[in-house]
Length: 187
Image 1 (cartoon, helix red, strand yellow):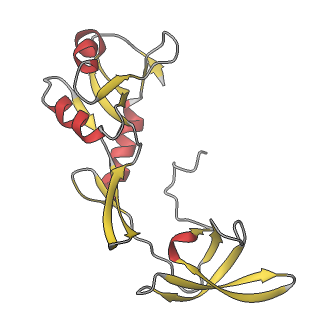
Image 2 (cartoon, one colour; image 1 turned 90 degrees about the horizontal axis):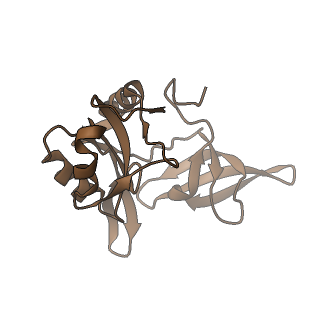
């Protein structure tokens, strides 16, 4: 990140008020000279009412906005829903344009509409997975059966030198070798 408080528009990270990311983004979009990027995840979650679609920001409590710091920083911080512009001490870092463009491109590849990425739990027979919760947390296994209606998966886990079948919730799994796009691996 670079520090640039000039009159040229730059991308900045804004801290929003709790659960007010969409409100802040909508209000910022009304401000002339401000471009806003608020990517959101859309996924199914099991509740007492059954499965429901859940939408939440990709970066909870934050959004990206492009504006001229000298001209609009005060107006931006007074927008309803915005808490502050993220700083490090006295330094207000600008986010590189290329980073935001890459993020927008990646979101566009997976989005349905309005900066929303749909997350589908796709686990197939033969996938290597890791358990994220429960008594076998951290153990890796191979999927041998998927029961989408029941949201359950049967795995083979190596335990005490033997392969043992275990049935777990679909949502307690992490793919052991996820398909991560190039450039996103922290290289």
